[in-house]
Image (cartoon, rainbow, N blue to C red; front, side, top):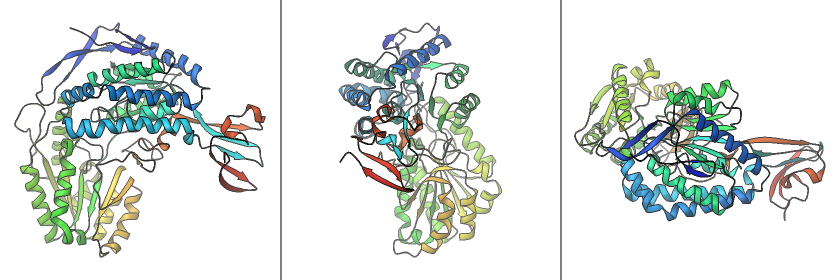
Length: 527
């Protein structure tokens, strides 16, 4: 049995641990041949200390150095595109094209290059100069960052290649990546590419490291270690909150993406205008990737009417007739079955699905539930629990007043959407629901399913708890996502030649905010 090498302190090296694990092919349920180490605490601690030494070397480096690494890394990834796609297909069951090759891998390299540009320009630093008080501030590097990647995005959210990784590096921080056990071979190829880029750009040993697996207790020790600057975690609510408790106790920042049902309100005018098209749009969005998206629409709220009944019937038929895709792992399947059982116990009426689907691998039937608005309000906490996978809940509200009450009863979500009639007939109802929903979601959509997450500066992929651990941050959207891994550094009456370049009066790097005579102005002083 070959146990794969880790990336520690600038080298590919074997683990001293005695335990190992392998991944499984979700399409067949069969074990894959490569094995990966479970690291003992001594290796985790070695990685922490190595990252801390690297940080001491790079913390005064210009952003250009980190940009060079990110650009080189993106190129190394593209050179390994075929191997990465093949490995990810085997480990996740996702289709080679378009999902992996044409969508997620280009998104990943694009994120890295966007982060490189932010590092190069320093746009994330947000320099502020207050001339009256001679106080100046900007964001700066924080220290070693730990990134836990999820199971559902083997490229774009991977601990060693995804958005959290890119943001942490752009801020000048070393990264200790924790691989997800569902796709270790994919992650190992990324580590190979990262090592090549590190060597080509002369980065210090320990700047990027990879640990495949560790004990849960060691994960808690890792995120709370005195030398760690911050942690990013994408995954289950339970796992994230355990890590958060440990990090909070030690006073360490941790940014979590946990759970979201992404409610969709379809108003009466929209149903009358294009109900059939909305049924098709919803089913495609909900069952895409077997529902394994953090922005999967897990709840639809409809006004009680004949049109709503027709919508429910159409969606039920489409769920029943659509093939059941593969879930990512055995534990995803078991958690999904447990989740839909809990929804039934909470009073949800099963319309279709609810069990294991035929075929090889980890498959469950496309599952659809229905409740009345009154039933939902009487048991809102249990009925909006996420069942991660190909499932959704239809809520039939008595009237507009009850739709507003449902919006008010929602937990925090990444997204929320309202579908309205195109000529304005639903505007009055929209104006009642939207302000309530606005406070419950990070991203408010109109007439658009939430599944896609554009990698643009204006994107917010965050939201109130329990969608994330903090409503003020995003994991997608550069430069905003970078400041999670930064500290605000203030300089009070510091002599001009000792200031960082962005805070000097003759700053060559670009835009900054100035407080002059009590007024804020933004000026490009480099021009």
